Length: 158
Image (cartoon, rainbow, N blue to C red; front, side):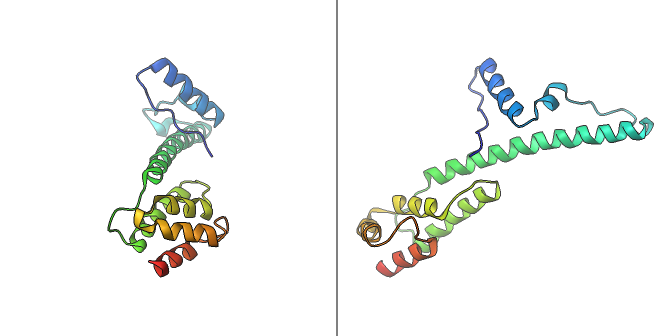
C-alpha cells in the first residue's frame, strides 16, 4: 500500500514536512524545491536547453500526476470503506456498486484481492441477509470464494 497524501490540517509547518517526506520518498522533491520557469522565448533555446526544459516539464507533470492519482485513490478508498448495501437494494445492484469502486481503485494502482471484496460484501449486506451470510461463512472457504460464487449463492438463497 502506498502512503496517503497528507491533508492540510491548518498547521502548515507539520503538513509541509509530511509533504516533503512523501515527495522525497518518491524522488520528486527536487522538482518541487527548484521548480521551473517557462522561458519567454523558447525558440531562442539551444537543443540542449530545449531537451533540459522538456525533462523538467515531464518531471513536473509526473509530480502533479502522482499527487492527483494518490488523492483520487484516497477518495476511492474512503468510498469503499463506507460502502454499505441500502435497504431494498438488489444483490445485483449492490455488487455492481462495489465492483465499480473496486475496479476504479485497481485502475489507480490499488492491490485488491477478491477475498477483500468478498469480505467487504459479507460485512455490509443488510440485516435480512444475516442468516445467509452465516450459512455461507460456515459452508464455504471465504478465502477462496470468488465474487461470482458469492453473488450466485446470495441470489439463490434469497
